[in-house]
Length: 114
Length: 114
Image (cartoon, rainbow over all chains, first blue to last red; front, side, top):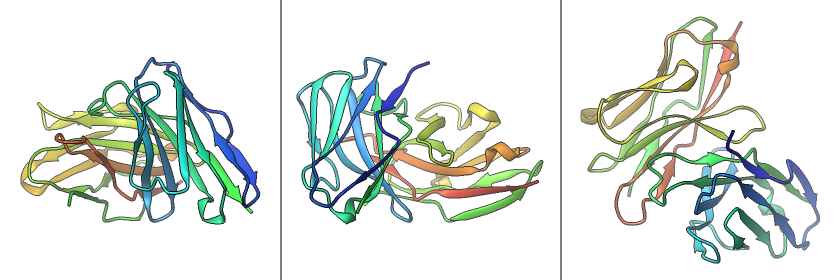
């Protein structure tokens, strides 16, 4: 069964900490995405990557960065966590950049910043 | 701007009853269309997709959806709901041009009464 694995289900971090959210996929997909999900706002795209060492900003990149050193791994970095970054973070991957076959999502990381 | 509307935030049905979840999109041509399901505390799972061909699409878990170009709709249906179908359902579209951006609706939460 193909998978997107997010390393942590729940995280609690302090304001100002540097936070790493890890995502690994085993489907050899070139395309990977980070979303945050908030009640009433749906899913919002933070960053995406179409290839190793390549990244593109999504709709809400402020306060975040990403790293894609290997094809299977796409990391989201909160440089200095703030309380307004408390959210559910979802990683996804896709076999094509056009997304016509849909995305495979990880189980999510629920981050609380205190 | 392109958008996706799920008019119903919450829907409650009895187990065994039929279900229809509504999705409307705003885009001049035919986008790629998707339905995802999210169980509590989980990521999103692809139920079905449409990008060409037969306008009635069969998906997993007994779900189907019908694309109606004249109404810009892609409603999700199930003839008999099971208690395990209680979840949140997201409609999504991809505009097949330019950046092929994914646009998610804000979701419909389904409650199933025993």
